[in-house]
Length: 250
Picture 1 (cartoon, rainbow, N blue to C red):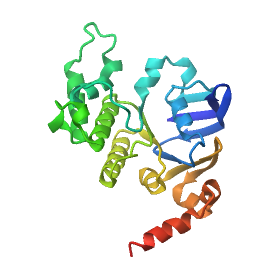
Picture 2: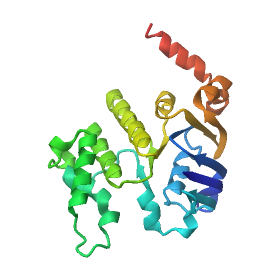
Picture 3: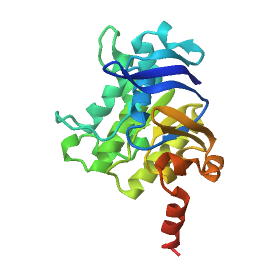
Picture 4: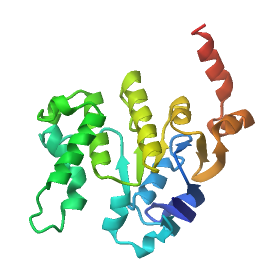
């Protein structure tokens, strides 16, 4: 579905990620310490940041695609952003249809756009507050609004950049569970950057471990955990910490 070959990118002429090669066939979670390049990698995939190397989606090179075409295939759900305008929930989700609406004779939402927005709101259980000002929502509700906006875009791939930060446990699990269902039902994929390793493994069995801008491991999550490579990446005994935490629930 998505292939990256020898990707390097960064800021101010300095590469943060170096020679990244990976293939995304289904959901994949990316973990690693702060500053290792996880968000930079997502920005490259989202076509936000210039890069060196080659990226292909469905066998087509990014370099041969217009920005609009890439954006129709890839949506990004980030950490909860600041709100500057008091849009309604419905209007905020409708923004996800912008690329589909742009270029039509009227440049106005058609019936199909409205139906897709309503379906997205139903999917995240926000239809009952569709007319509410988004500045009046809780953090969990607001993040679900932005998830609905990404769904309304109808992409092939959704990128997650720590979207569950600041959300309670129930909201975190609901978002991850819904995205897994969304990907499975439509032959789509989710690429998630998550600090919570348990949540990362809940999203996908395919795990990428990064450190210092490079991929240290890519494969089955259980095998990676068993290999103890996470200990060297995080410079701590990750398994022992997890087991000690679990023991407190006994």
